[in-house]
Length: 105
Image (tube, rainbow, N blue to C red; front, side, top):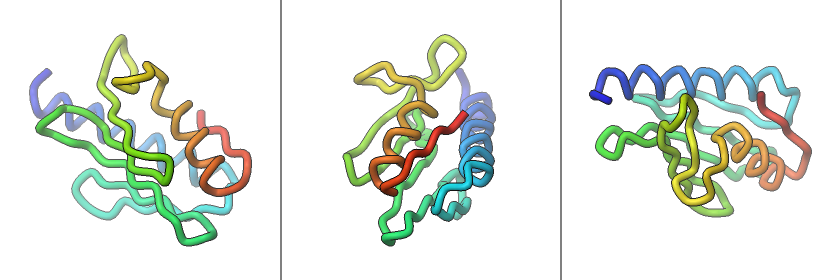
């Protein structure tokens, strides 16, 4: 995968995440803050940051629970340690951090 293909895939994923959060009805705010960085702020002021990391060709997630790296594999973004899909992982992280139930699809 070259840089432009990675950026295209990662940006599509970030847009999909932002749209899923905005339509979820959850008490969180999200905004794209720059070059491939999505900030999600929970009601308590804590944040989850989702960004594309070009050098590693991964999507990185920073949350209260820790840092997670997702790599494109078999047509979806998968956690490099657990193998869990990106939206499934984010649903769990956002639910835990926001104190509510949030399912992204």
